[in-house]
Image 1 (cartoon, rainbow, N blue to C red):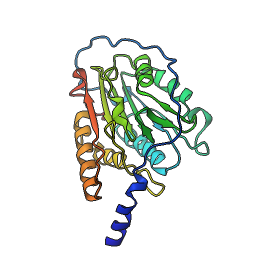
Image 2: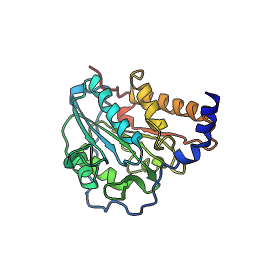
Image 3: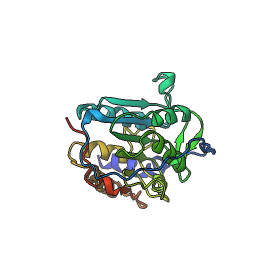
Image 4: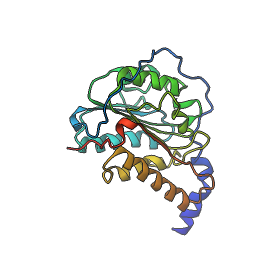
Length: 257
């Protein structure tokens, strides 16, 4: 076991590189809408949540494993409106391929009384990577499609990627949104190697999901789990997971039957 641990620690430099060397970002093609003032929301029935789960890259099984396991987790909590998008063309239908066009369509679709968006992929400060188009989906584009598709309803966004703290922009920080990011804007995240089952952040999110009452609880528990895991693995430059909780959704509960 000790030998295996040493080998794993020495491989961190490889699995930590959850970034891509391909340039290009999503063009600004979606208009933004304002979020109307709403009272605080603490609970939304599980059947009224709409979830969009996106595996942005297929060069590690961790990304598809993450969205598939989270889909099952949401189902056990009573969520039924779940759209899953994969970057593995051999495992998904064309309409569920994680292209920028399909992602935009899914996020703009509307419906439900609450939105949940989960993205796991490589990332840079430009945004998260969509291998299908070899481009980045940037924070401004995500804000526009969320405003169009989710409007002022409670909206939870999880971006699990290197440098994902870049999504905590002023525009993204709306009072009806909860934003969880796997790493600070200037940090990498870990666990996206070819031999990883999940990224570190996704693993912790899945482990803590059933124990948390609110999304804020889940964000804090996931961050603590990641910090402990990185400490045990000897990570010298930790990922520093980030979070934002809007004033309208400070007590927003996870969906439950």
